[in-house]
Amino acid sequence: MAEAQRRLDIIADDYLPFSDIIAERMPELLSAVPGQLERLQQRTRANLDRLHTLLREDEAGLVSVLRAEGGWNVLLRFPSVIDENALVLRLIRDFNLTGQPGYYFDMTENGYLAVSLLPEPEVFERNIGAILTAVSDELNAVGA
Image (tube, rainbow, N blue to C red; front, side):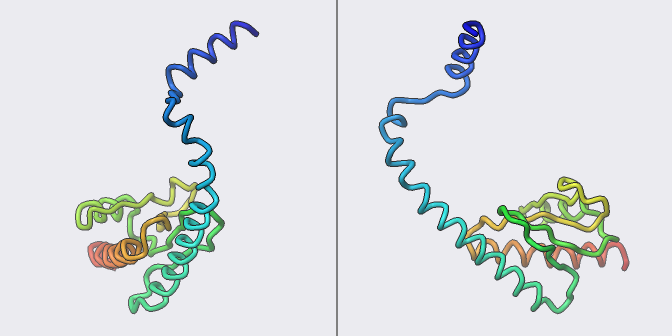
């Protein structure tokens, strides 16, 4: 037990530095948590609502959203003839934007992209517009 405690102390000292400044401000920092959580929940809900609207209004109708299961990511579904990796690379190259391919989330088929609901609303809307454009461009590139 003493040896384990000694090793835990070393880990804490080496990897979990905790300054006196942080220690002194900890009550203030912790008191801000509920307000920050509420702000985050409001933003993610609003972005999810806006996502549904943007996809409903998209004339091409190539992208849909899977049912959100909590958290701050959602999975988008697009035509499976589009390679997920190619789509992510196009987002990086053309829009300086990225998402995670569906296989990161154990999707067994091609055609999924995870996106974050965390960005500020105007950034989120711009990101979704870029994704819709990239999906259309990729679909044209594969000749579908």
